[in-house]
Image 1 (cartoon, one colour):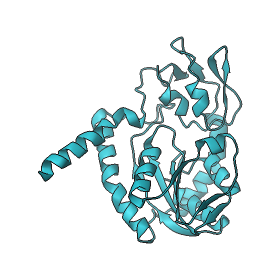
Image 2 (tube, rainbow, N blue to C red; image 1 turned 120 degrees about the vertical axis):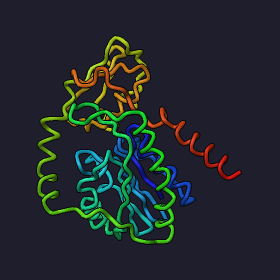
Image 3 (cartoon, helix red, strand yellow; image 1 turned 30 degrees about the horizontal axis):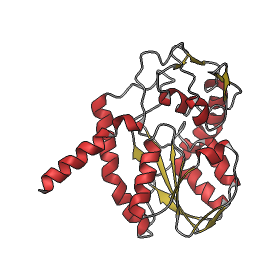
Image 4 (cartoon, rainbow, N blue to C red; image 1 turned 90 degrees about the vertical axis):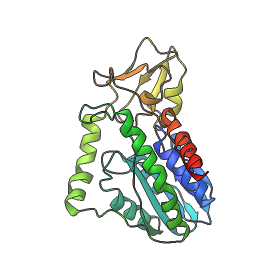
Length: 268
């Protein structure tokens, strides 16, 4: 079974395409995470866990959820991180999670996808051509990854160096506390009170006040679900997101249609 969390569609696309090639079931974990639904999940086929990379590791809320949820049936676990180019210590965390779940770690395969984190000026925006290139390249790699999983092969994981572990794991809690708060999120007058941001937030930190979103608490994961999926681009983060393009995968789904058309024409 393919399990996934996706904020702006990158991971969802990879997960659903993998499930299609594997002829397997696929499950979106967002609602289960939101509602703290830890009922067991059963699969007689390997578990394939797909997730975006947040601050060089799997989303901490996703790791915490999987630790509490009984994954019954098949003992094999594969992991599929999607990132803007660096998967950090994801393989190490995935391996540790497999051991905790008493599963057999079968490696991971990473996909470099268009970057969606815009609440910082540290990451340059990708131009349209680069976004399209990354989507095409990921699409080319999905079937090869699915073939390896179907054959029961271990995936060749990226080597994680000790210094990465020693820097990332102790540092991330500090980073989350100091740099990923909610106070800088706000909705502009363009807000149409659709409530989509509240519906998508995996940690339920968004409330509606007179129909307008308000961010509460300190547990925000900066997944960008709210800001990137707003249908009228009404959500901003301080002064860091103004004039930045919004990204969600479906906005660029035409890339795959064009690619399939080109392949069909070449086959004639």
